[in-house]
Every structure is written in C-alpha cells, then in structure tokens.
Length: 290
Image (spheres, rainbow, N blue to C red):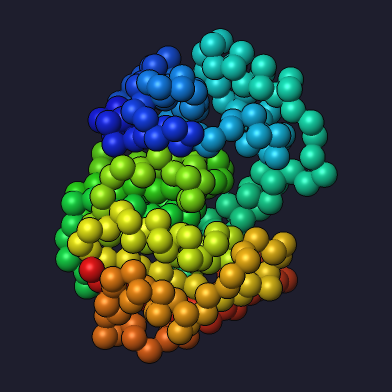
C-alpha cells in the first residue's frame, strides 16, 4: 500500500479517520496496520495488501485456508501473532469461500487477454482524463492498471485477497488496491471523477451499489458492464436490474446515458474455465455522465 493514500481512507466501521502503523516498509508499506483513530479497529496490511473489512475475524472465518496463508505470508512476529490469534477463534465453515475466490482468480488470470477487455479498453480511452478513479470489483486489476496510464490516481476494491494481491503486484505509484466490501468500502468520504463496476450486479445489490456510486460522483462518469446472469450460483441479489432498469435507475440518479450506450449491447465475453469448459456471456456496457 502507498503511504500517501492513508488520508483518503476512512474506517469501514465508524467512518472516522485512519492512522498508519508501519511494521515493514520498502517503496510501499509492506506490512502493518491501518488503525481507526476513533474505534481503534485494526485493519492488517499483508504483502502490501490492506484488508479493510468490518470484521477481520468473520472474514477469515469464511476463508480458513486464506487465514493460514496470511499467517505464512506475514513477515513480522507481531502480524503473525495477530493472524494466529484470529485463527484460533474461528469455526470451520461448510464452504471455504477463499477456495472459490482462488478458483476465480485463476480463471481471470487465464482470460486476461479476452477480446471483451480489448473492446472495453477502447471505450474507456474515449473518456476524458480524470484525477481520481475507483473500480468496484477490481479483481486482478486488468482494467484498473490499464486506466492508470490515462488518469492521475486509480483505486481498486475487491473482496478477494488472492485477486487483490495479484493486482498489487502489477500496480504502479498511481494505483492502489484494497480488500473491502463494495457496499462498505474505505473511500466513503472521497469524491471520484470516474467509477466503474464491471460484471458486479449478480453479487452486489444493484440499486444500493448504484446509489453509493452516485453519491461519490459530483461530476464525471460511471461505467457498468453486466451479462445479467442472476441465476448464476447462490442467490445474493433481492432486486435484479436488467438493461432498461439500469438505464432508468441511472437517469433517476442524475446521469445521462452516453449516445453509444443508450441501446443495450451484446459484447461477447468468453471465459475459459478449464481445458474442456468455456462460458460465453453477452455483456451489456452502460456509460453514464453527470
């Protein structure tokens, strides 16, 4: 994590300011804690990757294999003890969410050169150069680390430690990545010029996410993409939004839809899952402007 970005962050529990406790540092903060000035909650930074979730114990309780990996990755005795104490208090769940996240991390790595990303990057180059950009669901950083070439500062938020750690390895001085919940992230007080949420609508309540994004854009753009595959996996969304709904919601929030995305699109997004399996989605891209 870049030390310069501490002032942009807020506690995900009480929204107050954060201080930095550095345990190991090189060109970045390699290991340490982000500590809330108010409620004193500690958010660990391991392998340059901040984990800013409301409840770290709950996070690794659902990801016990990741908890063990974090203990191995920890360099200082203080951090190892912090992770070890947390692991000693968890109950092993039926499903280890970190194994699911690791699987999809591998899938996205394998598909990072997909033509879908090429098309999306072309659309993104048509937008103005901005100061601050935030990507929800940044995964392995394919788009965020592309955007850092055109914009001053780029930040990514994702719940997968494996994906975020990979994004951090590829990051630059003007890009940074955080493990955090999209609906409860550490940039709540910060305004952005461009916010992206790509293929996120099936995993995060769409209306709530759009309202959060809108509150963080005073003037600028929102970029969304989605195949609207709400039947995929465990139900996580109560109120799905589809092509017309998304555009209607954005207009209600004060966005105008760009001419090129007024009509829903059907962009191929082919995901190779393994040597015998491929998923092919038809993805809609929507760009709004305030």
